[in-house]
Image (cartoon, rainbow, N blue to C red; front, side, top):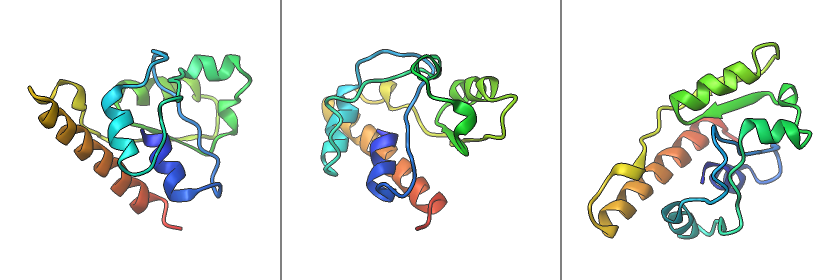
Length: 127
């Protein structure tokens, strides 16, 4: 979701790549739905890990900034870039996966996270 929001905000002015701690390959359906509400298509998006990015030839040393959305992701990003001149920022984003008993409550939680991420992107990347 964050990659799509970032690309929506900056277009092609900044190179954006998404990675996570684990590679589940399937993106969460609620993320797909709330992103689609803003015109962001995620149905074909695949979750990749830092390790997979490196295996596919992505040089993490070549990035200027990694924005981590969980403490674990921040730790892993710092481990993978310990010898590189890459800044790692941690944005404390709520985890919507365990929120809400009903579909409507879950959707509201995911919308809240989506809107929080988008607000942080707009504040951090003023173009």
